[in-house]
Length: 276
Length: 277
Image (tube, rainbow over all chains, first blue to last red; front, side, top):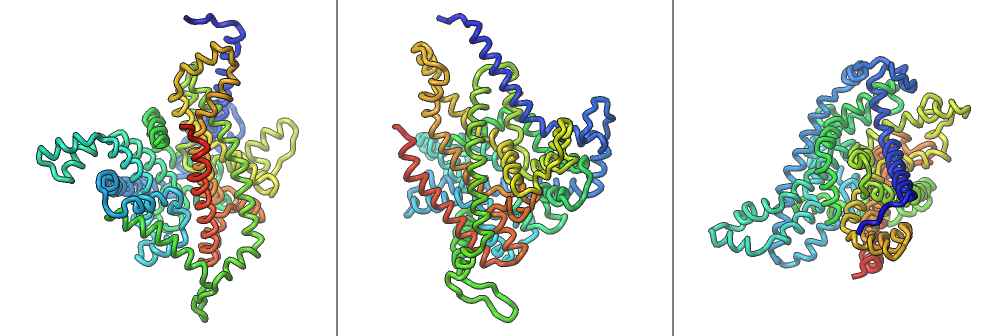
């Protein structure tokens, strides 16, 4: 039974659609504006003339003033090092927490969860002196190290492993798999959606991280994109606005493109990671 | 367990070390660091900037969190219905979330620049004179709040959207048959069902309001006269600009206590009130 829609209902729903679109346009406009500024000469920055000449000069200028390709490479190395280390460490830790009842496992797990609240960036002062003691300041490994044992990752994977039926493990054991074999052939493949979700969240988080890398790095060879951009765009450097826009777009482009291409997976991953 | 070693090295050890460090004085060339008890805390309580940044943090949280949550619910309601161009609208809401805070701050910096900035240019069409949004202590914090809301609302929307899709559609049909208005349905059925999400988002938002200070580096450096300074940025300044690590440690302890209180609050108070099962 479907009620016929009255005129006022139709009116209301189109009003809502309009409001949704208005908010969407408002929301995306700062970004659209950055594109506008980046692709037009400086004098058109606030002069919205559709016939304004397009140019790539701002990008050339930005690239000549700071080594963005090098920063991008650093970011890429940083993000992938962290991700690989996280996947390995969190898998092992989560497996232990999900399937073994060792002494004090509850306390140990609670201690892991402490990191959900007290994230590494809050302890910048002490973490910096730890790194200094191992003389790892200004290394990419040094930026990544505090994040590699991720409580969030351990937590997510433990949930996934716990929901794996025990019968599958027993079957694999009968086939002659050891503990590691079971983990590798049964648990890891079944937790694939969790891995994907966690990887996307981790990548976008570390791509965007700023404060800690800023403290740890002080050379071009280690500086990730965000720090490079932060230094580049500092108000006192007096760089032209259009060039800053171009630099900003350069640094977010890889992630933004990835996001637009895999929009559905991104959104779903964030949802998935949030629900757990 | 390698994971355990790293966790201990970068979470537990520093937490404890921070507390210990905060009890010592700054080492100087002629006088090594020595135990000073609560002297650093004494100094902190007498430090007007400390109280200023704490108040700023509170205002910042109050100013951004309720608005972002309200907007997030609104956005989720919008895209939870089948409207034309739904995935485009959803993308528009969510995109600011994937951008780094530094990039966001760079974009917004130009909006707020006095006279030549976008806001002032548009205002001048209507005959308003320029305003130094980030240079005026009374507008700098609101300006930063607006930007933060823009960045975060789309992120929170995702969680509400996920929760709304788990609400059985029969509930809405039933309430329609009973003649309930949509506002009534939202207030009495949907909003209570979204409570666990709201709690989750709330905790995350409060955490973020303490953790996220990246934009200050680009926009204001905590100025003018600390009008936009936040606790973590003040810790950073104290430790890495003034090299007062022990005082910074005392400040970090305050931050840790605040977070600890929040964790306890979440466990013992809110959890009970939120779950009906």
